[in-house]
Length: 259
Image 1 (cartoon, rainbow, N blue to C red):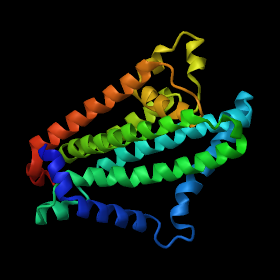
Image 2 (cartoon, rainbow, N blue to C red):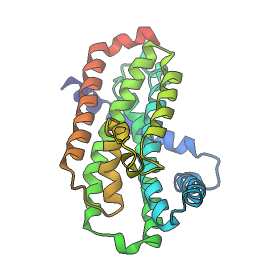
Image 3 (cartoon, rainbow, N blue to C red):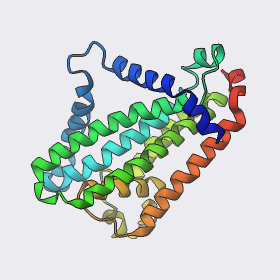
Image 4 (cartoon, rainbow, N blue to C red):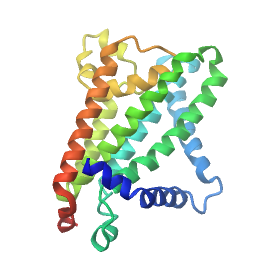
């Protein structure tokens, strides 16, 4: 419980840092935070057009599928990559004040979660225009999925921060790992493609696949009928959360000597 108590004690600093990060990210730009909508829209438009032409798939079908997978993936990638510098970039706070160290990876995850919400807002606008008939009450399952994703992002950022603070080679190595996961995760392609060739094991052993499924299907207005998908996604999240909490408490203020 000490972990959560420290977060509560540092909550005002946390929210102040998150607000400042969001303002600084888009300071001086004309569109401002609207870039959180424009960026995913641009990526989906480019990738969706190219692959729908290559594979001969209707844009009406492919674009929502791509959009619902790419936006969550960008969140995962940003939490992992941003998490590696969470403690390093905040070493002034950590060394010179008694600010709880727990809040700094959470700061990274909350900023990226805000961008995720804007990206999902863009998705709903596009999906409402393309396929308004698919809007239904199954989409409400996005809410519990987002809660799981927030915890997942915080845990991922925290573990990346702890590891990279001790082993500075971890950040570039993690970048390669994330790039590899992008290609073996059904973000652009559909699982059926590998299943038909008896290579379904590639995505079935991929934990990110299950994380994507619990949010992608509700976004598309589909019901997740496979109970094990939710179970595995929740299990992965709880495992990472427990590891991040235990390691953070174990290291504590001793992390100062690694900065």
